[in-house]
Structures are given as structure tokens and as C-alpha cells.
Image (cartoon, rainbow over all chains, first blue to last red; front, side):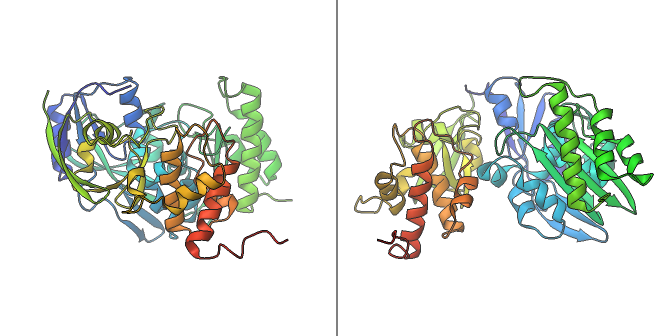
Length: 271
Length: 167
């Protein structure tokens, strides 16, 4: 199908984006890579009155190591995340996003702002304790990833705010495992294991409306449990919904297995 | 209806169009430029049939608006043939290896394969399968497509003879 008509603004600065969004009174949308937004428009599930194209704003496309973290500009394409070597977990996660043509255009800021419950980068953001730099009418603020995702496709960002960058802390050990029906599909389950400051986090995507920490499984590991025991705890504590891609027990089993594999990759809890 | 002027190059030729912002690059190529080689299957970024090269990177032309291509360089399947009309080695290989049947997915397959061989000329079969996974074909079962890209890669890297099966 074809999109409904909209006005188009090619913004040259973040200030202009915020201004246009504010003037659109909640009816404006940011167009970054367009790999999630344009299908939604084409299927007419959304009909924004104005699209603000941010692709040509200078200064948002850099990847910079910064102490114990890596700063990623909002316009960094997934293909560049795959290629960079500063943050190996980010590179591995980005490899799993869609297909080559999608990774060539899709952006880090866009993926996080879109907040798809099955997308890879939101899970990595929560798993690493990332922070988003957000620009709005009253200035710039930082938002922790765990405060960003409210529900499926819903974030705590205001309608006139824009993510300009993301700061992903570097875990000392990490593991990433994903299960999808076909290569490049959205994940049924994504498991991200990170060790940050000696504490192990287990974060799951695809099992709830937002990326979810497996708190019981983390506790099992903290108490000296094995990866297998933690995987079982993770499978037990989630409450996945069934759809045509998989029943709830199937998703539970797959989630446990993805946690086991991610922990094995991280070398955590191995017997 | 407000139209916007856009200028970009298609297969080396400069084009200037007045388009509605909602016009996708795919529709602009097909309807405004008359280049109907770019095919539209799903129109929401799933099938890969409309894949073109924009500034050296593959893009789904149904997921990009023509206004976004302003100032860009676009290559479509029509840009593959030589100046004298001869087929590109990739196209020759698709013919020779049964890389197509109905031909609907072929333009997207060719453009994705072109990018793959530009970046990884010696791609092995596993890499070819992985990189081509965003293009859907309902006829061939993919075997012929992988064969064709592998053969074209050998041709382009000048190793065509070495790879012939031993007698």
C-alpha cells in the first residue's frame, strides 16, 4: 500500500527537529532509517501529519570509546555497529538485526526510540545499563534505558523529544543468544548476559512488552548457582504470551535455552 | 498536494523530479523515471524485490522516500548492463545457473548480489546465503541463485578456471 500524505521537513539541526515536533502538536514523527516507520506508514497503521527527516543532521553519526563505555550517535547505522570493534557485544547484537539492506539504513537511535519488544538494541541497552541523551524543548537530559521502555512501541520520551546519542557501558564479560523462526526475522527470544562491576545481568527480549531482567536467574548466579540452574529460573520467572509463532511453554523453553547459551558464551556459571 | 523538487542521479544520469513527499523511491524510479526494472513485491520492506544501491549501500526502495534521495547516486538493475547492451557477469551467471524462473525477484537479487560481490568478491556459499537472506524467491529454491552468485564471483575475481569441477 501507499502512505497517506504528510508534510516533509529535512531538518538541519536537532533544535529544528524539536521545534517542528513541538509545532506539530504530537502529530509529527522523526524519520531516521525508516526501516520500521515506513512499513507502519505503508500499512497505514499510522498517519502522522509531518515527518522530520533527521538523516542529514551533522554530528550524530560517530562511534566514540569513552572510558568504560562506547558512545553511539543516534544516526549510526546498524552496519557500522557490526563493523566497529570497540564494543563487541553491540557488534554481535547488530549482526542479528534484519538483513543487509536493513542494516545499511536502520539507525541505533531509531531502533531504541521505536522500542519494538523483539528488537535487539533495546535488550542490549537495558542489559548494559545504557543511557540515552535526549534533546527536547527545555534542553538536554539523560534517560536510563530501564526508564525508557514503558510498553511495546511506547517510550517515556515526550512527543517533541529526540534521542541524539546512546552510551553503552562495556561489560567485562558478555554473551548473546537469539532464536528466530527464520534468519533475519524479529526474535522470538533474545538473551543478553552482561557482567558489569562484578554483577551479572540477564536481560531478555521478546518475552514481554519491554526488555526484561531475569532477576531470579541473576540471584541464582549470585548465590553460586550454575548456568543451567539460572536458565531454569529464567524460564520459570517469565510470563510469555502465546501467538502463532509459538506457544507460551515453547517460548519459556527457548528462553531458558537462550539464557544457557548466552551464559556459556560469557563463561559464567559453567560446571 | 505539495510537491518537492528532488535531483539525484540514476545509473549515472541526472534526473530532476517534482514529487509528493510520500512518493517512495521505488515508485519514483518506476513511474517518474520509467525504470520498471525495480520490482515492488510487498511494499513494506519484507521481500527485497525493490533493492537498489543508494550511495554505494543497498536500500529497499520501498522504504525510502524519493525526497530522501536528493543529491544521491542511485543504481538500479538497468544500470548493470554494459554500454553496448551486453549483460553483466552476474546476469550471465543467473541465466547459466537457473538463478531465476519467473524473474520477479531477480532485480532485487541482482542488486543485493552486486553489493555482496563488490564488498566480498570471494564470498563462500555460506556468506552468500546469509547476505542474500533478505531477498525472497518463490520459484528457484535458491540453489541456482547461490550457484550463480558463486560463479559470478569467480568470474569477477578471475578464478573461473580453477573452480571448474575436476574430470
